[in-house]
Length: 70
Image (cartoon, rainbow, N blue to C red):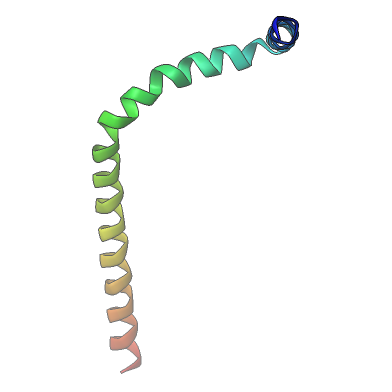
């Protein structure tokens, strides 16, 4: 069992030596995950506002089309 763990650690070490960006990205990802919980309501609210504006503009465009064809 201990031998298996050493092999796994050596494999992880070899991968991180070949691709150090994986370690960097995983570190930043680990730090960013708690921030996502705080930013999530803000991001959802901004997305909702954008969606409402797109809906309003689409409705205005359709009203102009109906007036031109009517």
